[in-house]
Length: 192
Image (cartoon, rainbow, N blue to C red; front, top):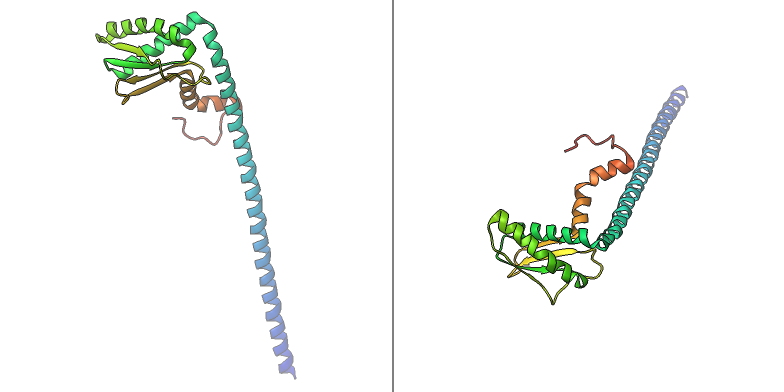
């Protein structure tokens, strides 16, 4: 009888040990589950903050785009800008025959800016260039202004619209914009 009690006692001890081990495993799994849920919540919050920041930056860039359309109101400065954009495009394309696309209501301004740009390329590069305004195809009305230039066969294209320039500046200056709006990123290790 003593042997049977010892056997039952041993079995009971084994069952208690198994139950404690099982409880430890469940506690461990519960801890992992809680940590996993916490990690997911933290990650979701971080993603919401990043989304808010990107939306805020896009709002600012859209406001800048709206203000770009006001540049056209000062005809003197805008004519100088157009001349500079045309000259830059001429230096990029380096072809003898260039087709310029602009807004319908800016044809006269662009026509007046072309001789100055052609004179610049002739002076600095020694090239004679024939620049023609495309009178059939114009920039869309929602464009802020500027010009698009193509070579005669259309194989080379330079987009010097104000929208494209704002997009380039927005991409190039994104780290500076983020830092100005949200402060320095402490997690960023490399600044190049």
